Length: 313
Image (cartoon, rainbow, N blue to C red; front, side, top):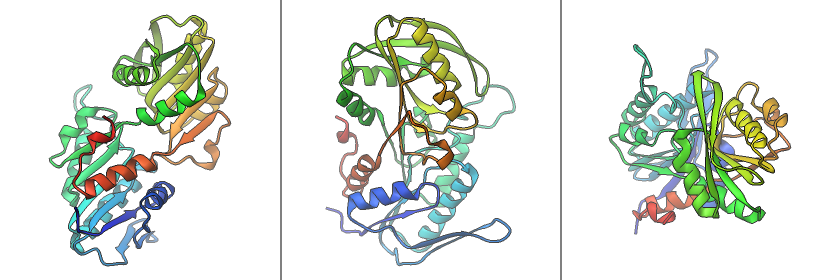
């Protein structure tokens, strides 16, 4: 059994989620200053002793991404210099994950750079959720726990008691996620074949699978501008689906996303709170599920040196 004291700290990117995790664990969020100087430089300080403690820093690197990343890195550095025993970066949404490879010459691999920065800052472990590319785990030279959101989404969908469900992946890359959801809720599977001529632009080509008279549930890891998900939903309706739902792990929801979702044929969009919704992003079709209990359980297991993977077996 672990003897080090468990402490939770957080930056500004999703304090509500950090508080939910702390409440689940029955502890308070650690005292820290996270402010800005007049010139925009961050001013971060730890206002309580962390010597010998087992620290978990909750900070999704969502918009404003660069500020969130710097808060995370500077806080880790401060905790390391304050003699924390172990520091785990809890990054439910891993920013820059979509830049995990070179698609053309002279491009960076920013997801790898992020891994280098987090490790160099002093993190001993990373906990994330639904990494856009699971291979990102290999970018780190420290242990990485990549927790799936599918079990949370599946439980909610099962409670809705929908009939004749077909789970649909909006692209080839998301088939494994869609298959996992379909297996958990006892549904059939379909795939949308699309091409992406440029970033944030997609074109639907074909639908592989039978949709007529089915309740279609689109699942993706990220909804960004919502172009892919709303186009796919319209095509599924054309193919005879009697109803279309959508779900995702990370609601980036940038640019025209909310307007597109509200004007789409999608009846409900189920998301998690890995990224907080801004006031202007409120939409009557959106249902938010909390990942705090799952992250809380993972934190307890890491703290007590128990298996994290058994949470999903």
